[in-house]
Image (tube, rainbow, N blue to C red):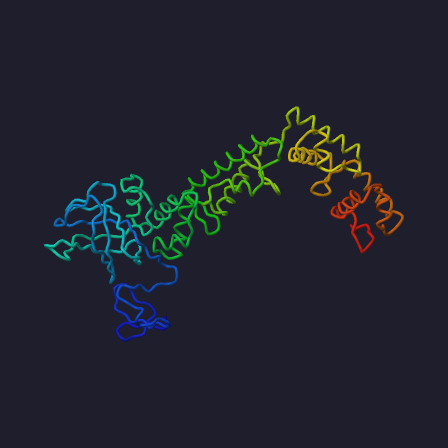
Length: 413
């Protein structure tokens, strides 16, 4: 938009109802037509359905089922079908809530006024009513839904905080955003921000970044997270917690990541859950072994202690204790958490005391020499390359040693 004039005078703004001329660039004349709306990008989302407060004239016929009408708002006109909400009939001379389905998208905002005209043969084009737009993004509910009627009564108040409360409550676990609230209410960003702050102050909504979440929906999300964790612990009592990705994946698809993170942080602050590096668990959960698992666990520990630095593979360990590899892996993870074994690679574990003894031998070597080459290192370990190389890499990862070409040095403190 290059310029704005009113009665031949250049102006920066014009109030509603004022005749003005707009200098537009990049728009062909033939692309313009009566009823178009000039707006900031994404400020208005054209709609094909609205909920409204309708005043039905005494001369108008009663409406029980969807009835065709012409809707006129501003300079635009659309064919529409009107049906009552709440009351079974929109009677002549009364007012009530109604839903209008439009034949084509129309740029409307809550608070916009409109006129309804009919198509009766005896009164072609006669005005039969009018009303005020309440909702440009109505929910998919039955017109007899009592909750829908209560929401429209709230929206009819045209109060900014109420607008936020109603729309956040409708959004449920999916939440809404500041941008969506602005589009759906027709309010400017500052007004939306103030309304959100007021609703938050009264504990009606919570915010996470751009996401605005109804407090009741957030409480349901927290309950669902706790129930999901409890079910996981019951099914997997040996595991320390549920992988964070699996927990998020167990939630409904429409839950935004910001809402999930907010719920998890609130539960953690309340002492309900523990957020760990790779897992999330109920605060009271501790991995437990049944008697048979305890026997198998002790057997694995004994085998690794006997093998020292020549540790068997996961397949051999599982076969030795009569378990499937996934079950053996769970027991190995349990032993690792207890500090009884050390993992060098994803599928290779060593007795913790044997690894500690190796550390002492390595430190003893560096007490006399500055470097440790690979042949000497393998001699210190005393095993084949299969386990020697992973052990060298383990001590590198622990920052005890550092590799420099073909030799290793003691890492500086």
